[in-house]
Image (tube, rainbow, N blue to C red; front, side):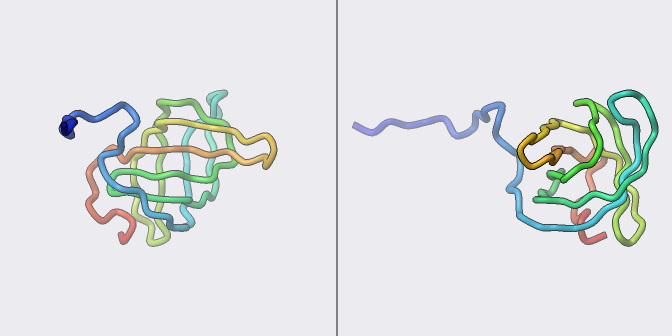
Length: 108
């Protein structure tokens, strides 16, 4: 007997596109969890067609909107999907989604 699974259903944890490990330095600006504006430099851990994961220096709230500037100066509006602090490494991780479809956004 074969069991068939419905592959059209996505779980909440499924991503719409595959993540690729890639380190790129970006400039980011926005508001931290206390509402203060900031501008800082961050680096990606991995990226996908619609978002990615950053190593971050500030605490920010889930749902916050930030501006991400590429090395070439192109600005992207992003939404914080999740935020995690690793106490052992004293490192913050931020998962984000691009707000405007940008196709090959990393190359711009």
